[in-house]
Length: 360
Image (tube, rainbow, N blue to C red; front, top):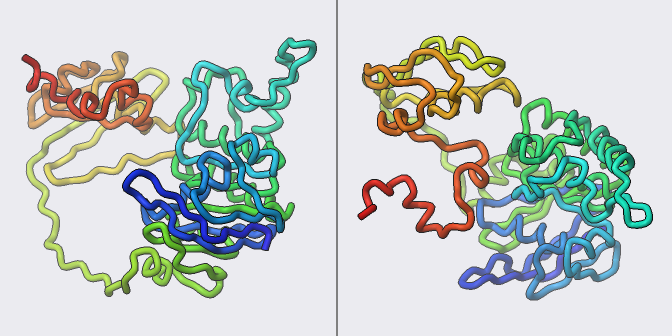
C-alpha cells in the first residue's frame, strides 16, 4: 500500500473526531472518502496534510512512517491538499497568492515577471482563465476554489487530498477538474477524494472508504459497491423503500412579483412570480448573473431598475432598507466574507438582524 493509516485517533474538547481509523490506499488510485457531516473525513485529510496532529496512531507513506508537523513539512513529503474552507490573502493578487511560500526573487527583489509567468502556467494546467493581476478579493467563490486546485497541483505532489472540490464549481469547471483528475491518475499521482456526491465518486474513484462517527466502517473497490450500500454504511441502518406520502403542495397567494428587473452590463429584463409556499430555483453557469439578480432583489444594486411588488404592494428597487422593511432576507454566496463580521462573537453576529428589538 502506498498510503496506510493505522489506528489514527484525534480528540477535540468533548469530541472524539477520529477513533482508531485504519485503512490503506494503493499507489496511483483515486480513493473516495465518504461519510456524513462530522464523520471525520476532513479531519483525517488535515492530519495527513500537516494542518492537524493525530493524538494516536501511525501514518505510512510509501512504506515510511510520517507525521508532518505543518503544511510545509507535508509539502516536502509530496502531500498537498485542496481545502473545503478557502483561505487566501484577499488583498494580494492571484499570482501572489499562488506563489506564496516560494516567491521568485533575485538578490532579495521580487521578480514580478517570473511571478506572473509561473501563475499563468499553474492556471493553464487546470484550464482556468483567471487574470493573474486581479486581487483575490474580486474573485467569485468558484474562482477561488480553482486557485486552490491550481496551487495544489502545481506543487508536484505525489499525493493530493481533494476536500469537496466541486462544491463551488460550475458544471464546466467541474468537467475541467474531472479531466485533470484523469491526468493525475495517468501520472500515477494518488488522490484522496472527499465528497458527498455519488455521481462523482462512481465516475472518478477506484475504491472507497466510509467513516461513521469517527470510525472506519468499510473499504472496498467501487466495482463491489453501490450507492444504496454506501448510504447504509454511512448512516448505520438499512434504507427503506422510498415512498412519497406527503400531500400535494399548496401554493398560496402571490407574495412576490418582479417585472423588467435590469442592471446595466449584469442582467436584463428579469421577471417572475412567487407564491406563498413555493420554492423558486435560479440556475445558470458562473457569470450568468444568478448572484447579481439575488443581490438586486434585496436592494444591493443601486443601478437596478424595474418593478417589484411584495404582497401586492410596490417595493422601491435598489434600496436595502425598503427590502428589509418589506420582510425580505438575504443569504450571500460567500457567507464568511459577506454574511458575518468575523472579529465579533457568535452571539453578536446572531443578534445583528434583531438589533432593533434588543437595543435599549
